[in-house]
Image (cartoon, helix red, strand yellow):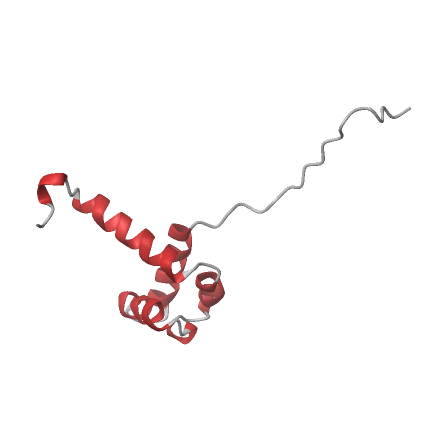
Length: 93
């Protein structure tokens, strides 16, 4: 007999979350494979919001459209600053 006094737990298996970094890597690779300059194409997409800057090869266009453009900029800027190893003494002003 089922105990109706206890809360039942229901766990749904979800797909692993696709991070911005993973999306950017996949898009970069797809653009490179098709012979495009990936930096120019990604910048064009971020600036305009026009998905035709991104190839549909390997589902790159669909992937990048699942991420907000401001999240792309944030990821790129965060990685740039981290790799530059900026410190408080490096700030301008």
